[in-house]
Structure formats: C-alpha cells, structure tokens
Amino acid sequence: MAAQFICYPKCTTCQKAKAYLDERKIAYTMRDIKIDNPTYEELLQWYQNSGIALKRFFNTSGMLYKQMGLKEKLPQMTQEEQLRLLATDGMLVKRPILVEDGQILVGFREKEWEQYYQN
Image 1: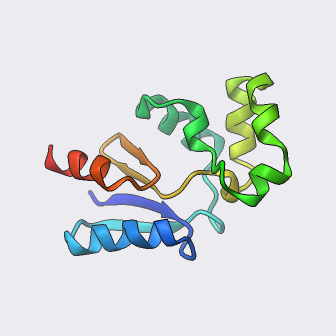
Image 2: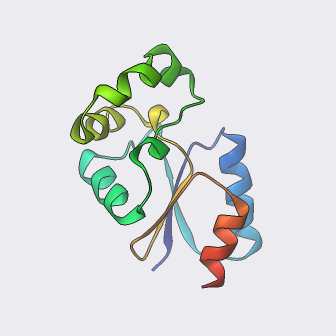
C-alpha cells in the first residue's frame, strides 16, 4: 500500500520531501493539509503510533500558531484539547506528515527519512 503524504503544496519543506519521495520512486498518495485537514481521530492515532511529543505535531513556526499565542497556551492544555485544536486547522499542523504501515514521520528531516527507508 502506498504511503500517505500529507502536505501543504506551497511549503518549501513539503516540496523537498516530495522531491525526496519522487527521486526514490516511493509510492504515495498526496493530501493537501489545508483542504483536507486531519481529523481528531487521525491525529490521535498518529500521535499514539509516532512515539514523539505532541508538541512536535504543531507548526510552531506558522503564523497561526504565533497569532494564537500557543507557545504560552499549550502547556496548560490537555492532550485532548491540543489534538482537538490541531484538528481545527491544517495550518496548525507540522508538515509534511508521512503515514506508512502504521509508521509516522512528522516534518522533513532527510536523515530521519533515510533511516526509515533503509529499514
């Protein structure tokens, strides 16, 4: 089954990740995070499967994150509140996200993706 590549096509990091997948002929289906925002249920499953901190799912460099003052608010929020907030707007979510065989990669760090695809 092809990987699910969740991205924002105008994002340069997402473009680099897409090029990475294309160069290696890795099959994927693309999903625009702005048009098709991840649901609470998806985010919960990805978070549980990823083994990474929930904060890494937030696009901390994004305008919306900064406008909402989330740096100060997140520590006081429960896990459920954070996931529900992420589900409200794709621009809050760190991208790209690669979902494949229950594995989750959040953001594009080439070394991390290399390790994943070597295994």
